[in-house]
Length: 343
Image (tube, rainbow, N blue to C red; front, side, top):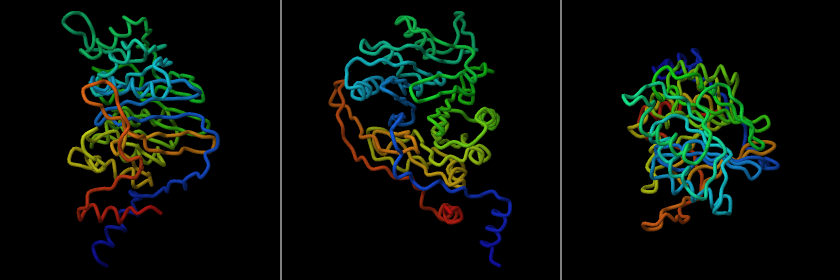
């Protein structure tokens, strides 16, 4: 028996690469109930939730993304005036919270409420949190937006056809770090999606899974798919049918396979591949739209908005096809890919 056969026997006998194949595509999802717009902002997060003509925003990318998000919201709503029921800042790193001041201060955007975990680190001047944290709070205060900083763990929000539960919301053990970033479980009927923000570490993944208590249909991969996210146990417990990475170069070059470039460890990819997940990256187009219907979720590419000159207006461009990501074409990756072929 050759060595390759022994490798296969060991792997499968240990059940390391057990395959749970995703269900076949739903031909007719029925009445469309809600939408999740996972925007192409490169190595950043900006996600718009939509249901029954209502809108909410989870993260807002870096400071330069504010105009893009506002323009997208206005095009989506078909009006310059847009109301957001709420905004959620998952943690105070610049690639998640930086674009919020522009959005919050925009004269055509109104916001009902904001959610952000309270920072634990005291600064020399007596304030808490870093510069971006303070900018977020200041923008909310100047616009009369109430901010919820405490009691976020398992907090439930009702939003159109969406039921949203905040996860990993227990008080911070330290500063606003990636492991402690606020996650969201979004449910539409019997469909579930987990937005994992930048959550990393086995302990936090275990805590979030315990809060969910079962599998999900869609996973927005934590920390942009870097090597410190999506452990094997987390992937095996959640068993998502589809996963989406928010990473890669944005608005510049075609970056379909940046997901598996040098900046990302392959472990998360293969952990998710092993459970049969179909994997997409936002940076092929303007992002990915998940359409929640009565009978399933349909995934569509968002046509990209590109900046027109030096103005704050954007125009549509780019391909609108959606395709799964592929791993680098190396011998070891070809071997693993062969071992992990879907059922």
